Image (cartoon, rainbow, N blue to C red; front, side, top):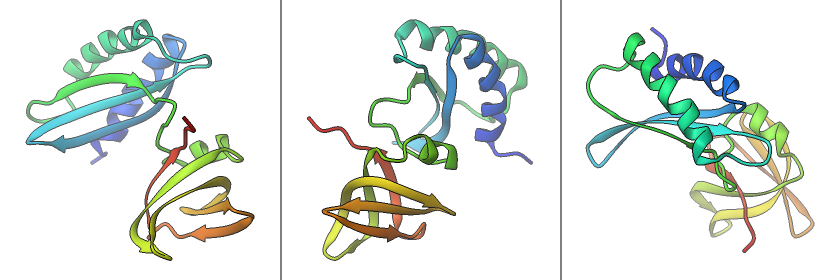
Length: 151
């Protein structure tokens, strides 16, 4: 049986493309006792509320028809965001050379968060350059990788 997120992604991808966007990610998570189905979209120049609506309405109808989720959930369509999470190999390839923040499960050299330039990605391992030094972080160490925004 396919994962809910894979099934939803297959439904969402053509809808997003028809709206002039690309599908970034799909999450199905439980928060505070409520299930959330989140579809993240992206577009050159940024995603507007109109883009989210253009994906949300037809996708909602498709989800009602396909009924891939048992029980109730909250459905959301939003932008991947400027500080988007990088999860898939294509995400990492797109943002090689960009500054990222890596959160670790356990401290490494006393730190659970590292910021540096994304230099490489292979089989879940991330190569980060910070302060002139390259560090390789294994898939098992990494809790999350996001684009880093300097404010």
